Length: 330
Ligand SMILES: C[S@@+](CC[C@H](N)C(=O)[O-])C[C@H]1O[C@@H](n2cnc3c(N)ncnc32)[C@H](O)[C@@H]1O
Image (cartoon, rainbow, N blue to C red; front, side, top):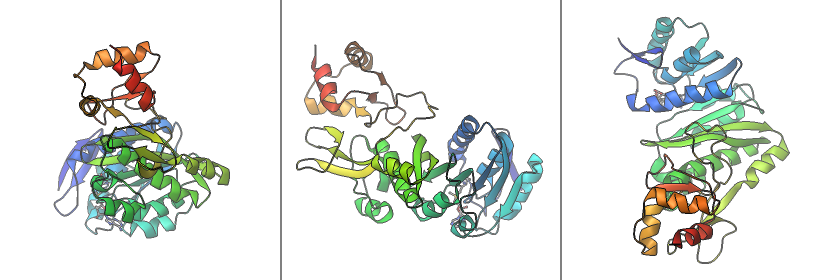
């Protein structure tokens, strides 16, 4: 049996169990976020765990007091046992059942639940939200069905998430905001509010971390932040609001903060990033250096940052109209 080391954790691997080395970023960012959020012992469930990789890393590299690693694949258990032995862990429990059945037996009890499926997390989001403690617990959702969430596959977006999405220049952020909004609406029916701690789009996947807030009024507050994002493909204008003629109504999507824990050090804006390449082309303007664009916006009193979502884009706390007016200045 082969073993690799990721972070400071040894992970046993075999051909019979799924393991994607490219998902190291997913596991590492999860460990970082949990270390940032939980300064005390906490419980965790990694219910679609494969080799146990992420759960073992959580057990070994954070303050977790008890971690359940679970996978339906009967070949996973041997790797998980080996992983526990290699890392000499005494805080890990192995399970081998359907993730939804397992989560449903752990109602409102966990500090952290991780959902890392093949494709969409939608079939597991309800039971995951219900397994979390109603206050100060964290849900981690991974989605690899980025085509659906980014608006390329409209039928899939409607079917899986109940969302109306279209392809836009800000598709990566639309995807994480769509996923976050879906999770918020899912948890709200249990009188649990969710807010986004951190969201990112990396390689072929979207990832959101959400925090629970107890009670009907917290749930109402969260749901009010799930809004239509209006977008005009003709002018590239975007803003939140009620559906109106001439604008596509996308979502509804999460319109609140996405970087409460700012792991990538980006400006946290309500609107998605502005794709400068696309905008300058649309406006028929000569391309301008990023630094010069930032200079104009700063001089006008706006804050900006680059974004990991798109290297040609800027995050800015201006509205679309303000951005266009400031950038039109000589
Ligand atoms: C994308 S992989 C997980 C990868 C893992 N988190 C990692 O970091 O290496 C998804 C896993 O979910 C498991 N799985 C699929 N459906 C399941 C279900 N209903 N209940 C439990 N496990 C399931 C598969 O066997 C597979 O190992």
